[in-house]
Amino acid sequence: MVRLIAAASFFAVLFLAGVAESADRFAVITFYNRLDTPKKYSFRWEGGEWDTENVVQPGQGKWHSKKVPQGGNVPRAEIRFDSDLKDSKSVLKYTLEAEGAPAQGDQFGEPYKFVYDGTKRYVDLKKGK
Image: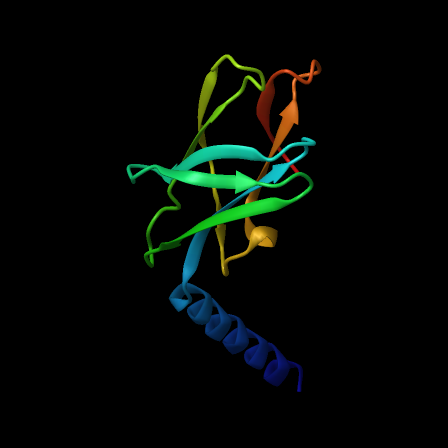
């Protein structure tokens, strides 16, 4: 009986590993807005075209995803935004790690957050929710 259970467990692990390998994967990244104003930003997946029409509302999150080919690497993401909340322009650009995920959605994304620098004049991007 013990051998039968052990053998069944072994084959179940092999089956699930095969399903996991053949399942789609996605690169997912989520930006949270911890400011009291909407935040505009430009975003692209490494080597892609810039999408300049992104806005995340205060207290909300916005996720981006890209299908990863089977056996492929999760691409990095790039973001740029104006850090100065006054009339001046101070553009920051970051290359970020995305999370490899089995599905799309904010709960699967590598989390980053827009936060004030302490003066409420400048904004930065930090890892975390």
